[in-house]
Length: 415
Ligand code: KG4
Ligand code: ZN
Image (cartoon, rainbow, N blue to C red; front, side, top):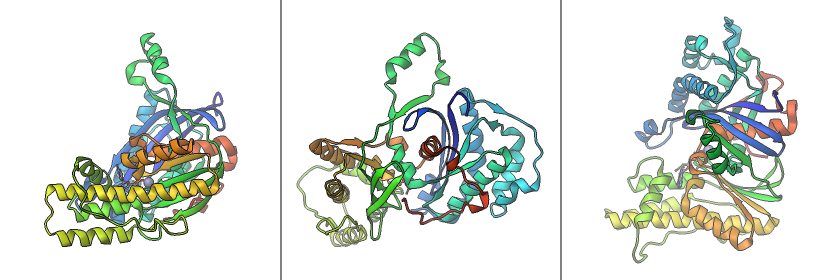
C-alpha cells in the first residue's frame, strides 16, 4: 500500500452485466474516502431482451467476449486518473492460463491482448463469487484467478449481495464547492475528474432490505460484516415479480423500470386490486409468485388491455410490491430496534419504493441509505467497495490463501 492508500480492481459477472472498476481509498476503517478511478460496465441487456430474460450460457459467452475489452478500458480510464501501471513484458507460460481451460474464448482473447494490458498498481483484485448464475460467476472468478497469477496480486472474494449493501453507503464528498475551486484554479483538467465519495457512518444495529432480480431478503446487521438473514422470499424475488408481470403486460426485459414508467402515467379511479402476499404473516418472509399469478388471471379476465388499463395494472403492481417490501422492512426495524436502514439491489432504483421507505425512516427518525440509481443495478464498483472495506478492516487476512479454494457459488448466502 502506497501512502496508506488502498487500490483495488474489482470484477462483477454474476448476471447480465460485465463490470470492472478500479477504486482508491484512504483513511481509517470505516471512515474511508473513496475515489472512483474507473467504473466500466458492458451490459448484455439488449441481447437478453430478445429472449425475454437472462440465459446462463449466453451470459457466460458474453462475459467471455466482454471481459478483456472492459478490463483494458477500465485500466486506461484509471491511468487518466493517475493510476500507475507498468508493462513488464513477460511472456507468460501456459501455467498462468490454467484456470481458463473451461473459458477457452476468454483465454484466446486474453492471450491476444496481453501486450496491450498494463499491470496496474493495485493491492488486490476483488471478485464476485456468488450468488448468481454459476456459468457467469465462474467466468469472472476464473478471469480473476488468471490476473492474480499474471500480476502476482492477491484476490479478495466478495458476496454480490454485500456489494449491493455497501454501495448504498457511498455518499458524495461535499464536493461541489471543492471541486469547483479545483476546477477554477485549474488543479484538475475536466477530463481527469474522478468521483470522490465517503462512506456514511453506519449506526448499528442496521437492517438492510436487499431487492434484486434473484433475491429479496431482510438482513440484520449487528456490526460490520456481522449479518443474519431474518427474512427472505419463499419463491420469486421482487425484481423477478416486476420482470414476470411486465412480460404478461407485453413489456420488454428488464421489467422493473418499464412497469415504473407506465405506473407513473396512470391516473384515475382505481378499478384493479392485486393481493399483498404475506403482508399479515407472522414472520419477515416474502412471497411474490402468487402476485404474478393473480396478475396473469386478472389480465386474462380483462381480455385485451387498452393503454389506460395497462397503466393501471403497472401502477397496482408497483404499489403491491412496494407495499409489502416497506411493511416487512418496518416490522424488521421495530423487532430489532434498528438505528439505520440500508436499501440495496436493482429494485432499489425504484422511486416509489424509495419514497415509501423515506417516509418510514422520517416517521421513525432513522437514517436511510440507498444508492444513486446508476449504482443500484449490478456494476463493478459495488464489488470494489466491499473489497476495500474488507481489506481496510482485515488487512492481509482478507486475501485468499490458495486460488484453488475459490469456487463460484450460485446460492451463496450472506452471513
Ligand atoms: O441487482 P440487479 O441489477 O441484478 C441482480 O442481481 O439480479 O437487479 C435487477 C433487477 C431486475 O429484476 C430489474 O427489473 C429490477 O432490478 N429493477 C427495477 C428497477 N430497475 C431495475 N425494479 C423496479 N423499479 C426499477 N426502477
Ligand atoms: Zn445484483
